[in-house]
Image 1 (spheres, helix red, strand yellow):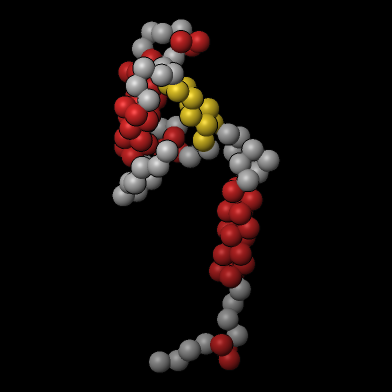
Image 2 (cartoon, helix red, strand yellow; image 1 turned 180 degrees about the vertical axis):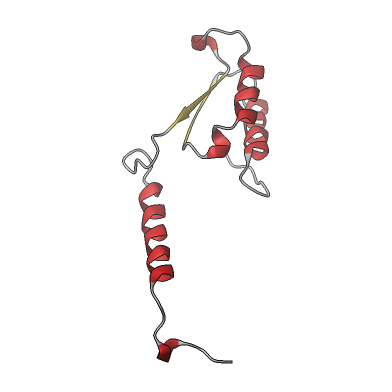
Length: 104
């Protein structure tokens, strides 16, 4: 399920979880995603506490499962991000030669 958001942050994450719960009302949900900081923020933890309350874990209405950090075998896009970041770092570290400089 997709939902648009102006930015990736904790508030948008909670809004998405609320959207999921509204769409799948009266269902127990498991969400598997990466461990982005906004997925594991205090705001998200507070929301989970509100949703699951004092229910035993095997009865939680919403369970969030985080993939291992930097684990491309679990989350293949991680390898793409790593390659992209490596190329950006290489470009940032290279010094332009005098011939490649632009003078205005």
